[in-house]
Amino acid sequence: MIRPFERKGSRVVLETPIFKLREDMATHPGSGRTAPYVVLESPDWVNMVAITERETVLLVRQWRHGSRTIELELPAGLVEEGEDPLEAAARELLEETGFEAARWSVIGQVQPNSAYQDNVCTTALAEGCRRVGEQRLDAGEDIEVIEVSVEELRGLFRAGELRNGMVVCGLMWWLDRTGRALW
Amino acid sequence: MIRPFERKGSRVVLETPIFKLREDMATHPGSGRTAPYVVLESPDWVNMVAITERETVLLVRQWRHGSRTIELELPAGLVEEGEDPLEAAARELLEETGFEAARWSVIGQVQPNSAYQDNVCTTALAEGCRRVGEQRLDAGEDIEVIEVSVEELRGLFRAGELRNGMVVCGLMWWLDRTGRALW
Image (cartoon, rainbow over all chains, first blue to last red; front, side, top):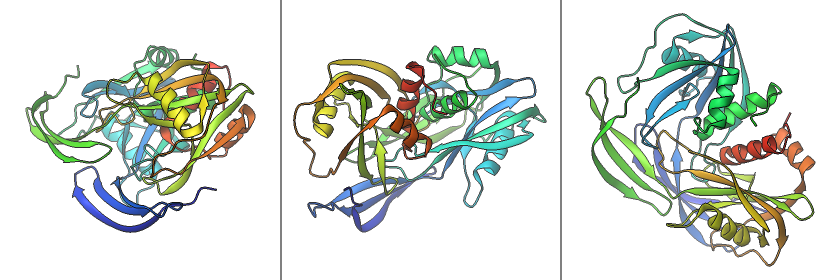
């Protein structure tokens, strides 16, 4: 029977623009040993499988500072304090791509990093998307919007062009729920 | 056309037992604006879909300090410096579960967090697993090993009992490659 560790103390070590780094002192339920554990307090994330009126899927290409590579991904963003994940998804889709959706629903949710991060990532399905304006990017962003057919998407995915774990989760769920296999 | 940001400087801000926190100064290719970006330098990760000789799948249940919940997951661990991901997988499977596999192969690889983490997570397929000894856990670990049938696994997954993003990636790939749907 697995029991929770008991938290004996907690302090914020460092604040960055994208997360707070916290150190918890926690006690092993079996041995009673207390040790420090590092946790990132992060806003929740959302990404979207956005299908246009023409049955294409919207992808974004951008430089990623973590991997130091240009990545092809689902549109995505941060959920602001008190914001519903679907509201955040609609806001981010409009900002990153200039598209609006007719219908929104939730496909699934994961813990991006259960080991040392406290947030969740929701994948939203945006259907009936159409372009209503221009991208409105933050000063630090440089994002290319790409429309692909479902078959092109499957080809890119099989070829290893979609590597971001949260994107893989969202796309695999969507493929599965729409009765499609990847391989 | 998306271009890389140019890195103008880099310094390690903080070292923890599980990652180094680095700050890069990087220049936007369009605007020329230079800004700081936080990156976690992390060892690579590996997790395993481990199938026993009896066609059951090995899962582990443990407390996760990031989510502060008890999570049901694939066995997983860190790839050590210079280690092959499949070697690391075999070592971690033996330590966490006491099982050894007859055959190893790679199912897929993702970037857990392309935005601000520099590592990859490989999912390995371990076939023909059998129990050869006891768990050998680190002092801070408390891990329960669970064997489920493929149908039980699909049921747990559909019920939302498997929430770790890297676990979701690995299991969705394995289901897809073995011709199974989740839903």
